[in-house]
Length: 162
Ligand SMILES: [Zn+2]
Image (cartoon, rainbow, N blue to C red):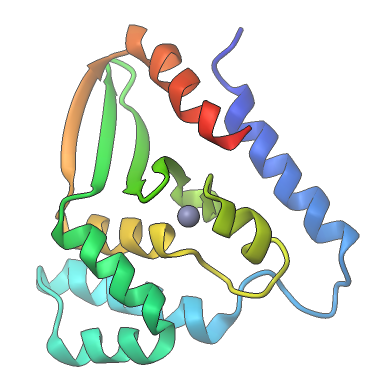
């Protein structure tokens, strides 16, 4: 079957990479990710994002937040729900094309993620930040597709990864 591999493969790669590197640092920097997660929770609860939170994000993420916010505002965050399975795929449209996001694994298929996040220079690319904010604000473009389209679309999105 050709349905599970990409997710498992990516997650596997992440774990292998983590294990190979020194265990002194964890992949997630609590302050950065902590700020984002907390603000997302509060945004979901309050149904809107506060100005003070926007400032906090700007301080924590700098340019990455600016780009993420632009992506949210320009409706470049897309949620695909495949029916009837209810499988969900998130896409953020970036400068170089469509990037595949796996929120649970904090994975993005962009080069920035690959070269910098994996190398621990930064902890999240702006696409991941955009996806989390868009989901919290329910400010994304929703597409419903037939399950039959899953493999077809995945093939397109995966092209960007390899
Ligand atoms: Zn990315």
